[in-house]
Image (cartoon, rainbow, N blue to C red; front, side, top):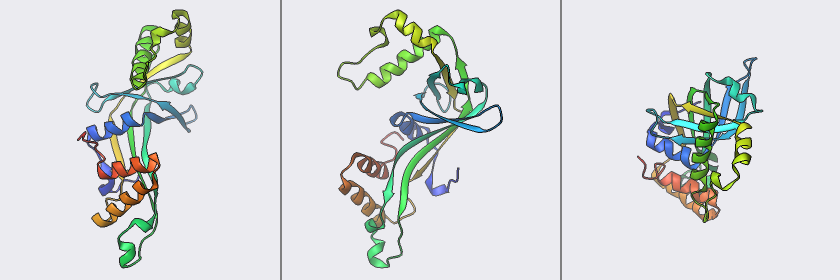
Length: 213
């Protein structure tokens, strides 16, 4: 991707924060004709496996994406984003030479697609994925809550995948190219909107690391 230096983010802990907060990734592979194919797939990060971490998830067995096993794939994670009005810029009152833009944070990773097509591995991975995403529930559901034969049938319908990350880079376009006064105005404008996406973007503009760096 096009990546000006002032928007580049390479700190693994900061990048991992986005992957964990926004786990729905776009997995991009090549089909048999060499054409790119994009599949939205939730992926869980195992930060302890490999220097950049390993992504884990599963796809429907009917989805041909898993036949790309061994292929170097691209994964794209999209963090907070939003429209930025020039009304928030302090410079608007000084010289008026301002225009709208769009702020966002996105992370791209690459690595080989690994297929885990064994019942025990699938059960373990699905259990970990479930436990991770059920953790915020008042009464977390667990894989063991469903009948064993039902779970076994569901597991036969999926294929588990892993992507050991070999590259990981972020583009955090958060008004770093503007003055401190302009940035403060943008943050204030986003906070004033009151909706959750705007507030989240404002938070990331103030601290994209979330204390993770």
